[in-house]
Image 1 (cartoon, rainbow, N blue to C red):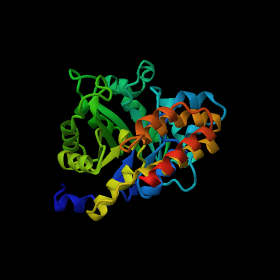
Image 2 (image 1 turned 90 degrees about the vertical axis):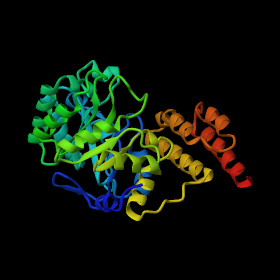
Image 3 (image 1 turned 120 degrees about the vertical axis):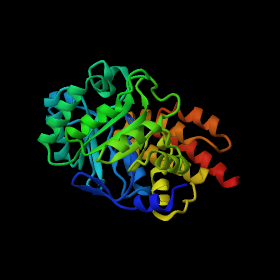
Image 4 (image 1 turned 30 degrees about the vertical axis):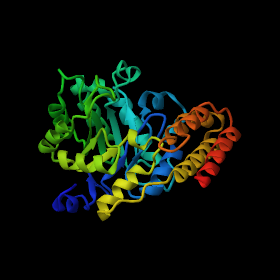
Length: 335
């Protein structure tokens, strides 16, 4: 649990440069997940939280005549940030300007993605090994836009190369208005435990806000992380897969000191059905294929979840998905 003083501190707005955000709980950018449809579900339960788009390639923006749909922002989505990745400062500056024109209130620079196809091109967490380039990117983006520029990264490349303290200080000195630290190395991927102690060390040396990320799967874990690290807020990632209620649950506790009643299996299935139908309306058949993983994530912790998960992960059309979910909802009524 949080001490009284700590909880009172977290009731104050989060100041990201010139921007004030009224919540200390943020929804992480997640590739293939945080599209417009998913963000709307999170926003329903966390109306004041900062939410991020999927990460967008600055190279792609540079070469395309039309902006990718990943950058599409609805007028009612504020506060929202667009996350960009690349290793070219000029491309990043150009992309940042276009992101602001689309409605981004901050520009977040991805320096933490561990995926090979990103790191081998010099983006994501590979920038931990190239701090001079990382600094040049931040400086160039800061010069190019008037909104705050933030950085999301990891604690290091591997256990032998944990350089987050030096790296974070360089990002602050280059003009970053906030740092989000995922408490794992690139080599860890998403395995093992997040090393929150490194986030605490970063918080002690920076004057800008520090957001803790990694292993935030519940209200309890968020509180423990905030107390352990002294961070200015938490960012939820994998804990929201199939559970867009999490950001709102944590935010509600920080505001009130009371827990929201968790959604029942029926409410989760209703949310899954809404998610499916909105993906179909927004993306057509591609949305059906993308919905399979989302629907599978919703299916846990209720009788028959495993079988339903298997069947939903193989749907080919909207009617199949709706029929399976309607049958599951009908079963929930009887139990």
